[in-house]
Image 1 (cartoon, helix red, strand yellow):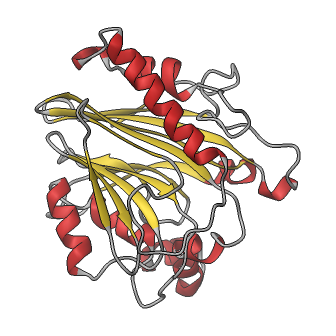
Image 2 (tube, one colour):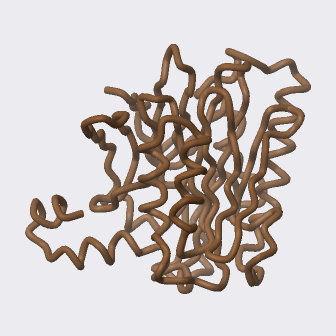
Image 3 (cartoon, one colour):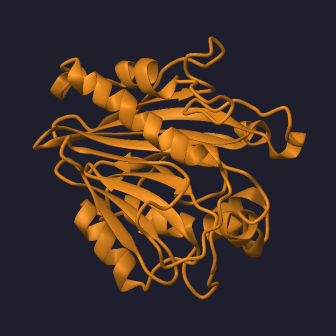
Length: 289
C-alpha cells in the first residue's frame, strides 16, 4: 500500500481507505457475484466467477502480476489500488469473492481485500485457511472460495465466527451472495436473486454432469457458454444485467468472468471483460501473459 501511494502521488491513508472499501460501502450498495469450483480430477480444480458491480467501476479494473521474493507470483483481476482480489498464484492457489451484507463489522480485524492478498500469497488452500485463523479473522462478513489442485473450500467468513463448506458429492462448491451455513451474524435479506442464482447454478452444473461432462471437458469456454452466460431470473441472473428500476449509481451488471485452471502441470486462467454471452463482451485474455 505504501508503494501504491508513492507511485500514485497519494496519501497512504487514501490507499488504506480504498482497501477497506468493502467494509465501508457494503451497507449502501447492491452487489452480486456467482462463484464455482469444480473438481476435474484428484489433482486439478477449475475455479471460476462472474464479478458483478456498477459499470462505473469497469474503467478501474486491471489485470496484474505481483512478484515477491520467497512467495508465489500472483496473477489477479483487481480494482486499481486494491492489493488483493480475484485470481491465482504460481503455487496453484486461487481465490474468488462473494460480497455478503451482514452485521457486525469489527474494525480491529483485517479488511477482506487484505485477507484475499494473504490467500494469494499462500502455498496451499490449507495454508491460506490457517493464516486467516491465525490472524483472528476478518473485519466483515464475506465469502472467499479458496482452492488449489487438490482442495476447494467455501470460506463463509465473519468477525464472530466462520463456517467452511467442502466439495459436494459431485466435487462442486458453488456460492452467491448469502451465507449458506454461517449463522453467527445478523444477515437480513438483501438480494432476492441470490438464492435463485445459487439454485440455478446447481441445476446447470448437475445438468452438465448428467450429460457426461467431467474432467478435461470442464473448459473455460464451456463454463462461459453454459453457466456464466445464463440469464434466468434476469436482471438478477448469473449473467447479471442492469436493473433499470434502480438508481443509476446502484445498478449492477457482470463486469468480468474469470476461469482458473488449478492444475500443477498447467496453472492458468482466462478472463473476459463484460457480460459473457451478451455479444458485447471483450476478447478472451490469458493469465499468465
